[in-house]
Image 1 (tube, rainbow, N blue to C red):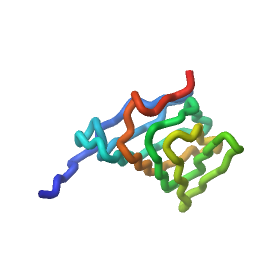
Image 2: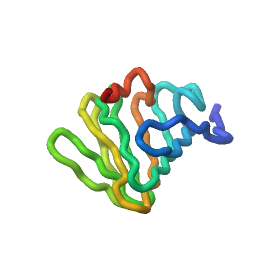
Image 3: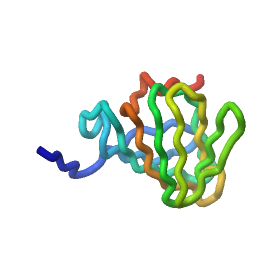
Image 4: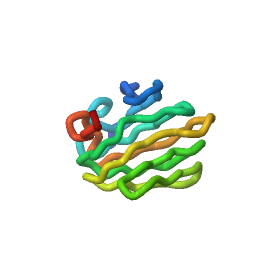
Length: 120
């Protein structure tokens, strides 16, 4: 039977500034370990620690610009674009523009603190 998700759970964020993370589907809000879906809103100038997670991440930018640093350089993902990062590859996300960014992130399997492997 389908399961309705009535509302998200606000998740604590990592980084130098507060970022809003509303998890709709995932380990915290729906008890789902196979995938997570979260609505993110990051302020301008936000930077999180680098990470080498054990999950693939699929991100669709709805507004603003999301910067994705990786071992070979960096790329800016703008509203209307998407990016896929593979499990095991090092990445660091940030929102360098003043307007920040709004985006949807899908992790497969679901995001977990013990599998994100953030830099110290």
